[in-house]
Length: 148
Image (tube, rainbow, N blue to C red; front, side):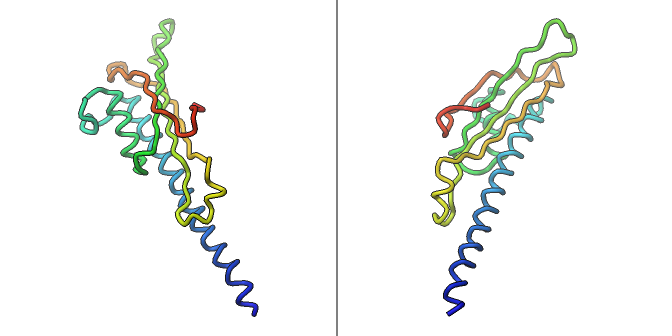
């Protein structure tokens, strides 16, 4: 009798722990992909083999998605801040943002995850003056509007 009471709770706790672990791993993938891409962008080292267009911004967006590796529902935004002409050391900055919807593997926790998004943004100062010129870019945000 005790097993019939405890088993469903134990199974629910186990599945919840697994679901949390998967979401945390997905968030870390988003965070790591955005950080890696931003770092390579500010030093001018984004691989040009990712995008067939060979446009620096397209290569950057493709690299972000490739580093995140969670599918095509990942939206990317790139914000480029121009350099301050009064400061010779300022070369501008690049902000890379990514967002993807959270999803439940089993469907048991869809109620808690529907409408939630895994988001990350990283802004870094451009370190190399001779790097490629990036342009602003923005996918349609899954949440409806960007928070970055």
